[in-house]
Length: 285
Image 1 (cartoon, rainbow, N blue to C red):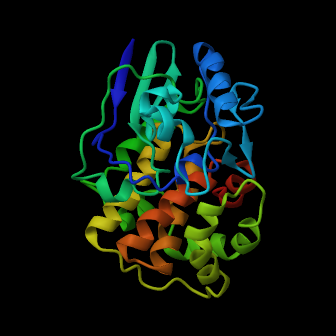
Image 2: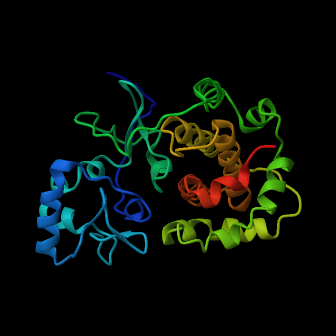
């Protein structure tokens, strides 16, 4: 088995709980009995829904009112499902005996640690979310090569794709983002981090200058690249996904370029763009 790694593999948990809200957690067969017992001891009913940890209003049933994992709090990190232990490190199968590993850009604090955070453990990984087969491997490969934050800037990427900020703005204006934030698939942490973006888009007439710092711009490109690399969206062309993600980079950057607002916002965007309700909004023409 070969494993391709998209570095840097750096992460520090900030115990924000956002990864436990709106995220599907796959439980391995040999973990289910233990999880059932843990739920019984914690007074939680029906912890599983199919092969997933059950959610209530998109919140993991083991998440307490302070957004902390009750399993972790009582028995430690090793007692959690292995997918939870390694999150946001994503380990996905993309072909026969072909794996990929990268930090999921959907972690709301990934922006803070992607360059200088502690290195993540790569031993004993389990497949995060099932096999993710893609029909357009050549297109994906070309886009991954294009999306290199060490070599490219956003303007050059858009030019290579034959898009412009005005094209993205037009798509964003027609997206009804403020209404989409009320969709049941959109969790509270995502609403909180994208509310100001939706407000900005609602009043958008024409694209303003993008005032991201070089580091923030690199992070925006990195988010798009990771999104494609781990095949965060299970269907749709890589080009469509790239346009949707670049639209988010510009929208979040236009709305507020400050790293502490832009970083979590584009991570939130990367999570909602995995749902059918959002992906169809940004199909390239």
